[in-house]
Amino acid sequence: MSLVKKFATVASGTLMSRALGFGREMLMAAALGTGPVADAFNAAFQFPNTFRRLFAEGAFNAAFVPLFAKEIETHGTDGAKRFSEEVFGVLFSALLALTIAMELAMPLIVRYMVAPGFADTPGKFETTVRLATIMFPYLICMSLAAMMAGMLNSLRRYFAAAIAPAFLNIILISVLGYAWYHGLDAHAVGFSLSWGVLAAGLVQLAIVWVAVRNAGISIGFRRPRMTPNVKRLLILALPAAITGGITQINQLIGTAIASAQDSAVSSLAYADRVYQLPLGVVGVAVAIVLLPELSRALKSGNLIEAANLQNRSVEFTLFMTLPAAAALWVMSEPIVRLVYERGAFAANHSTPTVAAILAIFGLGLPAFVLIKAFTPGYFAREDTRTPMIFAAISVAVNVATALTLFPRMGAPGIAVASAVAGWVNALMLLAVLIRRGHWGRDVPLLKRIPRLVLSALVMAVALYFAEHWLAVRLGPGSPLVIKATTLMVLVGGGALLYFVTAFATGGADFGMIRRNIGRKGPPAAETGIDD
Image (cartoon, rainbow, N blue to C red):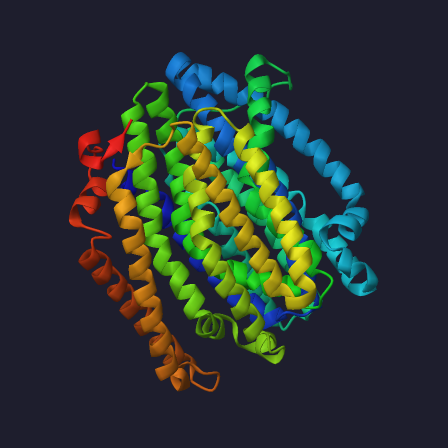
């Protein structure tokens, strides 16, 4: 199966999850707006979500996948099963201890880490503590599920792991539908959503557990022991956890800073949901598929294939995300108005703030996706330390910029800090890959990048004038059907203009499409890779 077909397999599941996430956020915005309960829920949910990225997705996609793939190659299924059981015993025990400690310390954690700005608002602070206490065990479920997903990805079974997150949104949409039907107040909605998050974690764990068993590996519980394999995993996983969760770390920092201003936390969360759609469909899919594929190429000593995989991944991510970034920058307000502007959200007059945040996130989108394309080049070589250092620098840049801009700009200042930190991280990752000789110079790719940027700019200018020409149809007084139809026409027309311009300028060609969709990568002479 080709690289893009594998991307598509993961992206289809992710797209379903993100599309349902839109539905969830639309209902939540209508029910809670950007009021105090929305701030409390988003801050509380951000906390276990950050730990999930740190100790689950980041660590296991970076450290577990190459080691698990090596066990399969050297010791077969039995060796991989033994390794998985050793890791499972240690991971489950560590997560249980962490969860108990965090539950007991939750009031202090919320006061000094998650949302220090809520401490002066008694009702808001207590609500956040209670919601976080309910949701934190979600971490255990999702960390174990991430381990199972890493196993499935190594076995080239991508779909179950990609589709499982959709059930979080399915359950929360059901909760919001129940709350609307029974007329629950905001506090009741917040607590119902928190219990829904916990239930979703159990469901997602069950899905990937069954998929792993169907793949021929049954995991039993072993007494936790520090075997050589586990020690190696932990050495790799600690820096990888920080690197893989850098976006979540920056978001947690942003949430803590934003808690000083009413509605800022929920405004950031609503904007984040929109830009997560292209980030998840393209960036996450590339990261999930590229790591095991790159690990296999390097283990077999096929450096030309490894270089080709990296370059084709960057080519694909830029081709898909540059127009998305341009559209988010130019059309953020019509998008926010269509998706969120109803119920409590409209009453709070939240559209301008959320739209400004979304536009800035759009400028950072290519960087966030490129980070996911560059980091497998380190992780597949079992180097998790270098990306961790770059992640730490990125966090420092984010904190300094956010603290500088937030007093002047409010929540949009935090979005600027996140985008700047993302670009700093992506450029450092690329520079060191080039310096080490781990990134082959790809002549066609270098020629295409400025032409793709030009195509995205042409599309952005056209959308800007079209949006102003159709301002009445996109305005707050326009019926929902008219707004939706107009926005879909603009998006479709913009996409068509981008693709026509990209092909006309040479930013894309049918040879590029064939290389990405074909079953085998082209030889080095065709790709222009210099070893």
